[in-house]
Length: 273
Image (cartoon, rainbow, N blue to C red; front, side, top):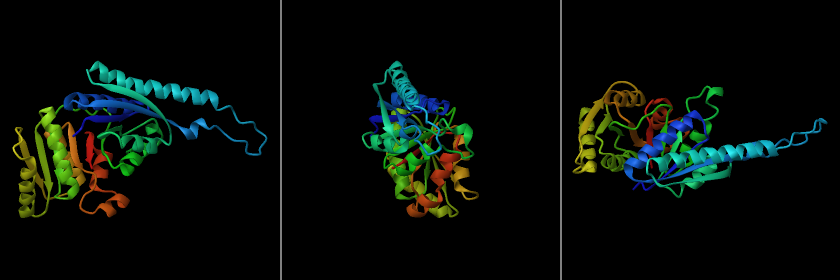
């Protein structure tokens, strides 16, 4: 059950999108929001004398600036939530950002992150290093929000019959029920009989859900691309899938369909654990 949502922010434009999404979701599922921002120690420690005879600058002005900025960012999350009638609090932490978010996230039900943070303009990857570190390290369900993602719309559940996708199905049912949203179930299988078996399993997991459930299957192409295409076609507001699929170890080290979808989807992706 989602009762507390952690919205991690660095104050950037990408984080602002995630903040809005977290508040909208919290309002819909009747959860409280904890807005946090982390002051990175690597910036507050300053430079050390390195034997070149050049005196390093004082770290105090930068440290004060970063703390004030973190306080403003976390407070913005809480203010947005309260304006929407959602219970909220704001916290500032210090340390390595992904580690501190993962640590604080152990006390909540869902972590919401912006896919792109402050460094988005200076890298070539499709997901920020802090967000990537968090979704790889955390044992909690996490929601990755790309810029301009919007919550209204049905949910797309990507189901492959793995333990992770069963967890995702239960989470999708919970979220859809609270939001009053339809669920589109996507199954990727080259075997029609196996696809039907997976749909039967999903029907059992969904139970008597009093909401529309649409079934979509596909046999050609890359699964991650087809999941995103199916979500676009359904005009989904959220993709829900297991953080790990059928081969957990391989996926962690080599990159899974979940990671590929999270990197490329213009729609928010909830990685269930």
